[in-house]
Image 1 (cartoon, rainbow, N blue to C red):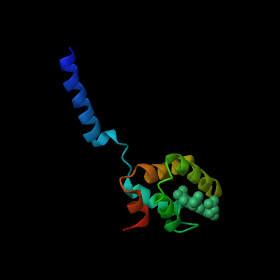
Image 2 (cartoon, rainbow, N blue to C red):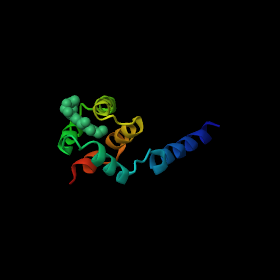
Image 3 (cartoon, protein in one colour):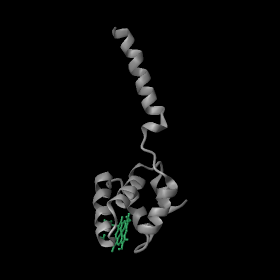
Image 4 (cartoon, protein in one colour):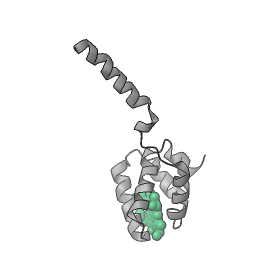
Length: 100
Ligand code: HEC
């Protein structure tokens, strides 16, 4: 029984790592549009970029910052969640927001 479980476990792990469906994929076009329409109205993207480059800024900090911005700008929770996903789970958030 044990000998069967080890390969089964390895297969499960491999599928989990390789399969793109296992990652919550963000729609990069939607990210660009949403951030351009909702986040760079008041300040430049540079403000977001500075924070993206700060390793101390984790998903929780982004949650707080976006909630603060959401209050200023009256942003729907859905929009805040979209932006949060873009800034924390995109393959290259800085590439999305700051350009190359
Ligand atoms: C209504 C105007 C407005 C909108 C819209 C807005 N911001 Fe801001 N943002 C500000 C102001 C004012 C500050 C500086 C004061 C502050 O930090 O609260 C700021 C500061 C920031 C900072 C720096 C804060 C820090 O703690 O270093 C970040 C990052 C940021 N905004 C991201 C965003 C994102 C992401 C969005 C889109 C969800 C957004 N902003 C939308 C007005 C806005």
